[in-house]
Image (cartoon, rainbow, N blue to C red):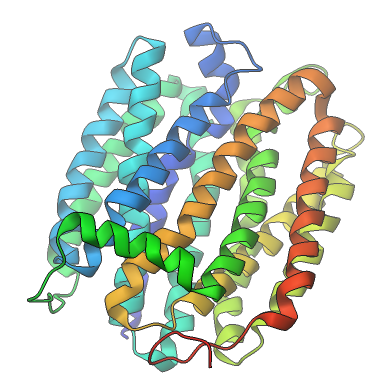
Length: 396
């Protein structure tokens, strides 16, 4: 696949997913503006994850039956409208509804692009291409926090979403012209049969089941950290600005590098070793993170470990489940990311609730417990995981 096309998939995925994460550094500002208690403001992130869940069930599978390029155009237009709505809403219910729509359409775009890239790539380069697209997602998540914090400090949190709507409109021009045409299946399943076949993968694909559970726990731990980080950093005695909070996300750029490397390691057959190393890093990250109040250097070290572990495992998971024929990639991505949405939403809600009751030490204890559980699940299932056949995706 040409590098320019790989880059387009990566940039589109990154820009789309950024919209889902803008709210995380802004939770304190949103709580103040809408009069929501700190212990409940995590529901804003949960609303975006609920939208993600709906997208994975209802929208992402459509890519296996319809023209992915046309779907991308329609979803992008809807995403721009949702961003403009969030930027202008004046009520709590409006905020939650807008966040639900942003999660719905941002996720549909992101996962649609990853499935698009995987189905366009040839089998021998699929891990590399998926890794590159996922690296774009990582950078989008990281830069979302930087953009969110910087713009909020300059013009307020509403400017974050209005500005993103403008950026997505510009990106739409490239999407309209450059995305490749793919052959569309002539025989199509009825819509509800398509959704049913998506859910059937959850019952029949062992690799998807195991990797999905790992994803649920991994993204739960990831969301536990990022959803509550702004609360201790913006409070006394640190009292950091939103720009400073968002800048910590740049430390995770190392995770983007390892996302690309993990895809290549999966192509070489090193998926289990990569998974073990990633889960160990995820668990160890909570040790330095616990000492945030002692030194911000400990926070920086913890973020590096957390992001590297999460992204390496995430790409490895996707490389393993996308060995089935391209006609199933959209539904496989949808199934896998269902676990992501559940884990992220539950992590966000639990994180702010625990912070309100037990402070930052309670958040770290929760995150470490979830990370330990993920490592235990991998150890208990690693000997039973197989290398699926590329032609069918089934275990021999």
